[in-house]
Image 1 (cartoon, helix red, strand yellow):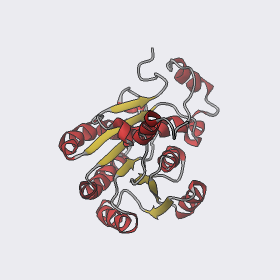
Image 2 (cartoon, rainbow, N blue to C red; image 1 turned 30 degrees about the vertical axis):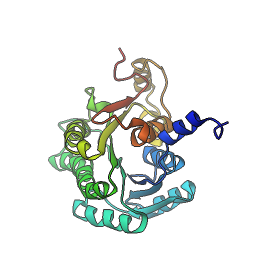
Image 3 (cartoon, helix red, strand yellow; image 1 turned 180 degrees about the horizontal axis):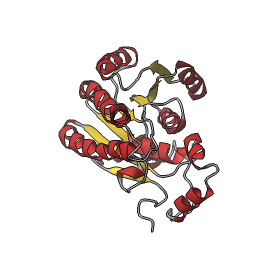
Image 4 (cartoon, rainbow, N blue to C red; image 1 turned 45 degrees about the vertical axis):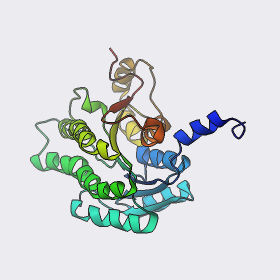
Amino acid sequence: MFECNPEWNRAIRAFSLEGDVALVTGGGTGLGFAIAKALRDFGARVIITGRREAVLQGAVENLGKGATYEVHDVVDVESAPALAKKIAAGAGPITILVNNAGVHLKKSVEDTTAREFQGILETHVMGSFGLSAAVIPHMRQAGHGSILFMASMTSFIGMPKAIAYSAAKSAYLGMVRSLASELSPGGIRVNAIAPGWIETPMLHKALDGDSARRNRILARTPMNRFGQAEDVAWAAAFLCSPASRFITGVVLPVDGGASIGF
């Protein structure tokens, strides 16, 4: 059917990532792994990074052909240019960057130390800044690129006991808008996804045994259910594909309506 229908072929090509080289931080588990899989399924060559080599090895085995890994800690901002250069030498210029790596801290403001606060900012804000700056020259070389930040519900709503995480994820909004304004004229688009409550091991760790919190989340989610990692992954693939070629500087909630729920 597709072969004999030119419009179907054109539609398929609009979502194709063939020829793209994608770097996904924190790609060994959870949403990062799901995004890496979607990008690979859409045709990109995918490189995942993280700090735990055994986890990355297992993820690459599951991803299969077209996926490799590099051990990298995003906090080590000074090493980001070398990482980008190494990937470009082996796979070609990086044309997709997904700033997904992150850590969470659930503490009251009184119990959050200055070092803990700074550590969250270093991972999310400085880490994504360092890699974004490192891959931009490679995207310019390729003539196009897409940088995607993983924001959060805390980018939009006040969430107790998440002061450091909220600050970091809110900073993403400013970074996306500033980078989009600066880079989009050169063919590099910059966007973000703000996942809602998604079925992941991290979610279960937070909610298992806390039925009151679980019910409160579902009550403010118009779809009245949690999302799947694949929901976020497909949105990421869309925002990195030619199908979204006129979209830049946006933050897309993938949340079942939680950010607008009453």
